[in-house]
Image (tube, rainbow, N blue to C red; front, side, top):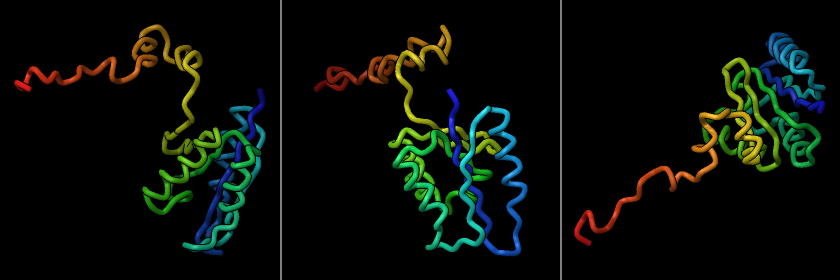
Length: 144
């Protein structure tokens, strides 16, 4: 299945060049065999990021499968903003990848697909809920 990747590149000023971001992300997509849609901010401010806004609107319409960014600071300016935006992508079934920093957050997989990825060793613990793997505190231990 051919996936479509949304590449998000951003520079803060007109003097900066986004060539390195574009090259690295396009090369990653080429290696993966993905088609590309590019969203580029030529000059962004704290409040105005039209390419980002368009990318998020397109994500809600599932126009692509994956979002790639060069570095996390090109995507978000705070941890809260980063987590909220990845959560929004996740709820649309969009995977978020920052290959340079080794980050590949993705939506939860179906149990079968997850088992296949983990191999025979990790299968059992990946499927059972955490409550089955962590002992609960018993009331009688505290005389209650």
